[in-house]
Image (cartoon, rainbow, N blue to C red; front, side, top):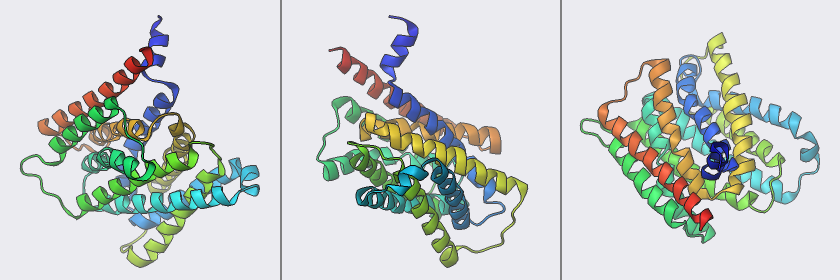
Length: 295
């Protein structure tokens, strides 16, 4: 067996794509922190997803014209979940660090299997279950080191993790049989609307449309929203929700690394141990999947 064939066996196509977009998402915490210097958080969300909806709308216009009632319902429900999740996360980033927000968002891996059982009546595999336990232990090590206390931002990002876990499971429910591209468009529309409405109610402070802020909005809209979420919607159905959640757990690892390089945020020894434990959980889940395929 060649090295390329081995790599494909250990990390199937869907898993590789999901890992790639996880890297992109890991960068968004630092990019968002930079954008928040000039833009209030909920206005940033509205701008980001309006631009993303426009981009996806151009690409999926033919699909949008033939939208079914089921696709519209699925897209708008997913948009509500996505909008609420990003609202909690973006506002939370005002009060906490990019690296810590990344790891707290990663706690969705703890909630996803429970929601999968409750909503889909699907039990996760043994490998996924052990992977979740290992990942959960790693997240605990990072989020509860001595001397660190939860603040308002941490609590908001934790709420974000719960909402994103709902999103992962319902995305599987709506796309398992068939993936319709216009669902992504309606997700973005719903997320943008929630951002703008919430901005009118809760945003405060000044707004400066600097080149840095506009560049950040474009990056978040194109790479982290249009490309990443479109890929997730298309390929997550080729894996299990719990397996996807474990892959997404690498997001905080990438977030911490990029925050260190871009913002100078330091990750201490305890946080490093937590990140390493989570990585072990990811590998365990992947390798168990390979063993199951070979038996």
